[in-house]
Image (cartoon, rainbow, N blue to C red; front, top):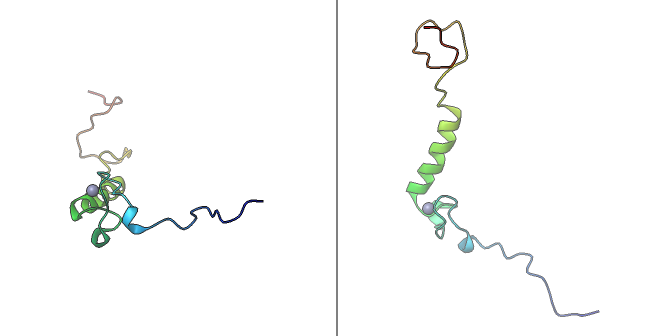
Amino acid sequence: MSDGRRPPANDNSAATRKCPICGQAAQLRFKPFCSKRCSDVDLNRWLTGSYAIPVTEDDTSSEGETEGPSGPR
Ligand SMILES: [Zn+2]
């Protein structure tokens, strides 16, 4: 067998990480993002994914402009 050749298993350095938002090199300060801006962007995505519920499928809601396909006019 061949020896002396080890696969780079632990080659997951933080410095080589890239910002998932813009793809630039991530900064340790804003890990895993490159800047606070990208961090905010990602955070916003999470928030909007959980918070931003534009229309609630609830027939009990009397007030609210329902702009759906099932809107009797
Ligand atoms: Zn970025």
